[in-house]
Image 1 (cartoon, helix red, strand yellow):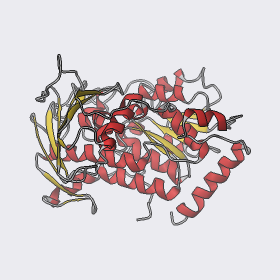
Image 2: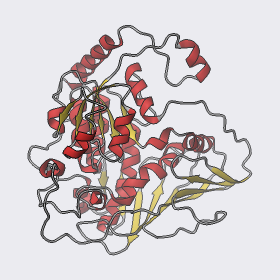
Image 3: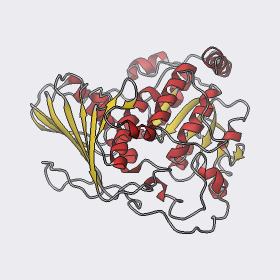
Length: 440
């Protein structure tokens, strides 16, 4: 790993320069008019991409890569792999992403696995100098998010978090308005969701079940402790288990809190408290309320309180009509702003003045990453930002899991009021699934 920074970055850049073949490509973030004028003609060699996880949302990510050269696909479920054979007939098929990363001539990797596999797969790719698009949340625990951020920076690779609404017009407009401070000093922020849509709050299942045909169960477990297969874990229900998922806050937080974190330049909160329905050491509770105190807020000297509600808990939100299933409300001195889910357009309540909704068009979230890989530029949601956004969500999970307040030292990355909780920052990984070393 001592040669990571000096060798892998250079190797990756040489590989891309050879593949680009000297073509000129217009800058990614210039205005559409300038971009069109500069990009005559535009020609980009295709990226050689490996996709890990091709079922469910992974299928959408795979489809978004079809204009590139998908040379490898990987999934622990043979059924999902089989569905890719016709459209991606030239791609080599793998069941184990560790083997896929040995595929020659890869340029980039898309990671669409359950949360507990994100860090290992993404860091394994970065270790080889490959660009990475990784689904949200960035990782399963805070130690992993920090290592992924550091490793990506050291390697100089292009990264993007898969919270696709980050690039939507609605979220970008909300971010612009917050950066401009049109709401005035903020009193509080309230976020809510109707999730979970999967079971939570249940106890450890008894016995086991028959492993579905075509599923490599041990590979699915990856770094998690070995156990018998049970349908309570897979498919789809894994989000509710501490060992595999990140619960409701980890699932929806990277979407709903994203424009708030980006627009207000929030660092990790200094304090987190929570209350929830009965919890246990296996699964997330069925419902929870989390409160965070931020002391570093763009254009604001006073602390900001953010409250999160899920699992049927209802926030005291004043909004016209029925409370939507998901959303965020920001309360400012001059006006309020409602940010709906899935990148839809924000709505102002009050008259802050000075607003504008004139935004340049940008490529879609996945296409932005593809273009950035070609151009050698970073994306709008790289692992540096993604680690900060994910850390905020995971700190809420630590308070939920422990039932205690968390006082956070963001510089040291340690819990200072209850040091015994610091073991929740990482996890024990099974032999054979260790993370690559990172220069500390």
